[in-house]
Image (cartoon, rainbow, N blue to C red; front, side, top):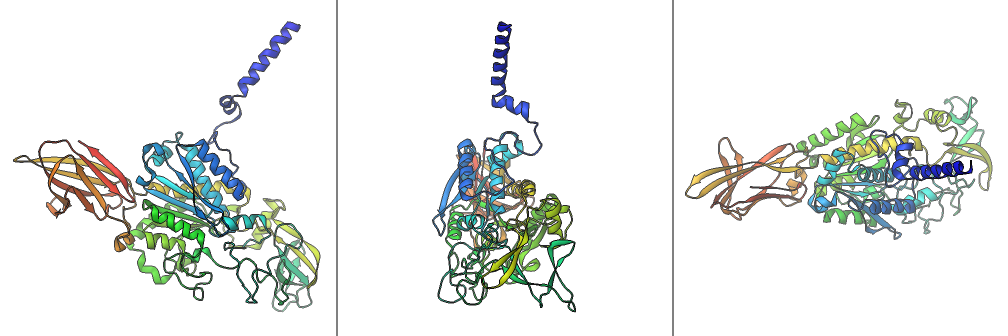
Length: 579
């Protein structure tokens, strides 16, 4: 019996050792779900929000676990000296990143819009983890490069998470100004009176109040009819009058809007509230601008904001309507309308027409100043709760979510508090991480859908190929070589705005290894209409290669040498053909 027990113990130990191997664990414990990494090298929970420390740890882990796909760099410093991190995601084995068409993605320009950070990071994670498992993603990263900046406002990103705030504060970075004009800076911010990390509402019983508590749901405040008498008055967000000016919470983090700071159609603060001093006066935006200027291969861009379930394009102001050429709008429409199909509850809108006027906005600078096809998505929509649209910040719907989906986690119940200035009040209301922000159970789904939209956008940045190379013997040792350069995607190598202002250099098509007599751009092959390039004919300059279309070039060469044809485009990448 003792011998049998020894055999059993040894066998059990071997079995446990076998079960402990990663391969065995994956097979024994998990069944693969479609559309998501099965056994990711970098383990991340996409149902919560990460601080700057956690974000940096995840990004470093990505770069460490995927050294041939992910590089991490700081592109500059924030106002408080935090690094602004960018992940470069591509297959580094298939060429230099700068030689590939690029997609820029950023989030969290407004400090309280922190799911943008998670969604951009999810995109980097998904691309790197699915490379090698999905042919589509593998080929995409062989052809394209993604520059991904999870937060371009790192100072206020952590301030929103770690300090008492409401759903809407702050939108700015961490520069502090004298908002109330009393000569002091930041002396009267919010006060977390109940020390729960959330700035909720203050109410007080009053004989002239206009609100009552719903007898069926004491969380709910309802305004009475004009002829009725209420019981409560609203006192605003939690806080004290620290500076004795008779106003609560009137001088916190200085108000400015980082999304009014960009150098396209910028207007001063008295016209565009929040514009600050001058274009790119915000150091975080300046770091992004300088990176974009150094990377002319960026052909598409995406920024993430909240709230509303929107796919936005410019112009931000009606005064700028002529900037968006009809041919470019057709491309914007095609990509965004496809996005509406796989992002339920999201609508494709134009900023100035469907929202309000924005001067000095980021998406207008990216397109107007750099010719980059750019969207700004407003993340989260109440449609995701019950698959019907109830409207922005609908109290009944939000209370229903708190009752049936978060089970009381979203609302701070009213409780009494002795306020030194207002007397006996009640404090309560929705937490800062509800309303504008996704509840955890909705985050990964919406992150994936929005990532799919940016991936679709990146897929349709230009992809060039040299095809249909034909030779005609002209006699006397001369040959006519005609090549077709085809753009296999929707987006042209130069947007209309790019062409209008000559933002990027032309595309160049070169023949190497042949003695070139002359070179032409073929305007119409059927009728043999050509335009000769008399200077440097071996390197023909092309203004643009349209999406899903082609251009033709022609050389007259002498001799019988082998030759190759090369295409070089800032936003279209490189392509080649060899005889």
